[in-house]
Length: 228
Image (spheres, rainbow, N blue to C red):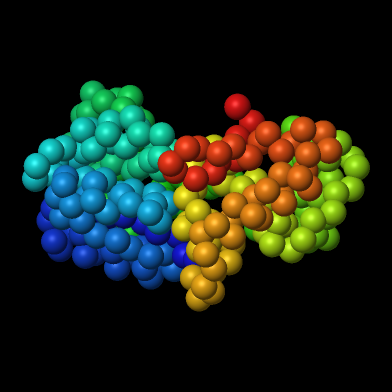
């Protein structure tokens, strides 16, 4: 499933240009023209990153970012603010409400993509082939091995894919629908409750040293992998 980028920008030529640039680089662009339609697009499956204009009809980027960051389901979506304002105070305001980066118009496509990729690396810094480890739970996607405190663990291929997804996307809440898309794929019909079955199996597989507690159930929202 490709990385989804929500572009919230009221000026149609700029919005379309941004959408075109991100799609040229293999991302999926979702477009919104004002404050309300932007919030309406922050639905499951959630965008992986938001390009957010400072000035919007119906509200502004600061209010938009505040609303995102106050909601547990959306607070970890990275935001890059877009604005014609270059003043230091405005940049500080954007960063204070939780924006991850700030880019001043006009900017080049090259600069935009460099900023997007840098923010995405900070959010999910591991590549798909990198070994990942949390609190002694280690997963190696190349050798397809999982261990807990150096003891080898056995699990099925679906549980392995699920664990790999969780460990490369920590501290974010994912609904059952989104986990289905990421782990099973969009072309496979699987019922939501199948996710619960595999979560139970995964927890059992990694319970040897208490790592099952890293997979948290978020009531009414889905699941989160967290060391907190």
